[in-house]
Length: 462
Image 1 (cartoon, helix red, strand yellow):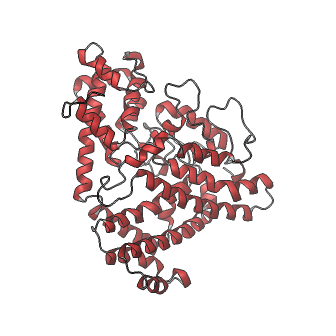
Image 2: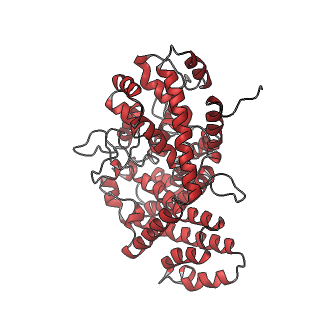
Image 3: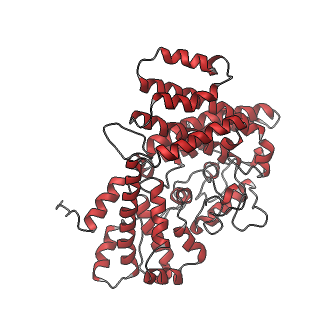
């Protein structure tokens, strides 16, 4: 891969290759950002759990606020790296300089904005709930599904992955005639796919970062292959449906890694789960040995002039994010050769100096023990299992058993944008429609629908 051919204004659904943007006020990648932020799928993220249940007396982060913050950090990282590449290669021409100096920040911001758009309700437990249903379904349902789905198609559900679902949402037109979905540029889409492999090839310990999870379903395999061909992204030797990462993915991932490691702890402090002293203990060591604004002494002096503890946490958070942006941007440039060769098999955060990496591991371990297993977090995860599992059971039984009296009524609940044929030869598409419908729900809508179709709540006449 090379920097000159890793970007393009081409969009999904384009009949021919586009070499220019017909709208001079916004470049192609700003238009990507706008299309995402105005979309209903993005808007629904405001009622999807990030970590803590939504909302209480204290307003914590949801998927939407998290995505906006990741986009802000991603824009800064993209600007740092873009400026560095434009400076390093001054003879590559005006188009090269224009893209890397001014357009790469928009690409990374747009990718960050959409990075969680495929996540189902109830946080990561929603993914687990979908996987669990398909791996533990009753023998009759399993027999029908296994007879009519290929192994690759079955794995899309057994290993349901929000990253793969994001590519599906952004590129699939569902029940519309116009192809291309959101019609985003290939550049932005390539910057989202963290694990460029199929569900069948993914979730394996191969030593490749691409197979840690998956990045596209069987239904979007051709779309991703076209993206890979456009940018010259190589397929990994000896593997089927496994590709090297597009280098820009590392920037999107870095922005997400920076945000969730500090923001979840900031929320925990606001909810009085952790103390200010513990927050300082976890983050101030990164500034040991620093000078000027990035010294512990300077930060402590600034903190002494702040009265409110929440404001103190916000200040530390802001300084730490700024430090990580600069550090990971430089790490990206230091690993330029490996990135272009597709051989860097760890994220940028894992490339930190050993001392800083140990500090990150301390944050990870503390977060798992004290935040991700906090009682209310576990409770919302359990609720997600029951609600999503219950909805899948009701809707899929209706799809599978067309002759049942209840089935016709259940299918009517599914919006027209998710077409249901109830024909065995189209079972993969039908099951995807059910999963598309459920994964797009907000937490509250999923709970409300589950209560209504199970009779827990009797709907009112409207």
